[in-house]
Image (cartoon, rainbow, N blue to C red; front, side, top):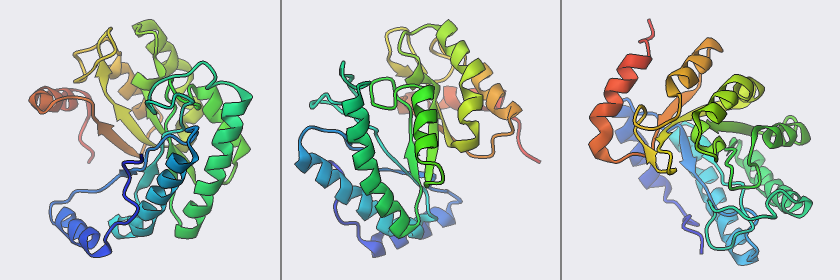
Length: 238
């Protein structure tokens, strides 16, 4: 059962955008995540309808990125891994579904966001590079989240991702997610987990990343700690 609505009222979206503009808030992305390779076709069809509903109104919100979940063969949880996610069968199923979504994207002139996630089909940087090469010229962009590329829970692995992987996907990256996580895999405020996020941000800044940083994965009680962390690690632009 897809949580995505199959219809979004344009008047409501226009009113929302007016309110956001008055507050100088920009919508960077619309979550359109569903399990793109779910074994149940009805769930995939419902997901496509949700993506089209969002694509139809995206222009009213300044044409934000539509973020996707590349899917898993686990039928119970779209963020849970499956031993066959790296199989040719899973890749082919994902590409078939992506072809359908790209038709929607081209119809409404929107961009689709692919986030490498270790429990999904596109589970590491090399798989994302392969995807971008396969669909060269398509309206695909990368959402880069360090926490989702470090399944082992070690800062050493995270440092290797920062050193080797960011540059490979930098030209295609529109959004950088910033969240920390504990050694037990629980998301937390930057600075409260094991990820070397200061180095992560410095790497993007050194490459002159001009996209959007999105901080997420924490409770509202952590907001003051987050603000302090941002002020410590981001220099205001002139």
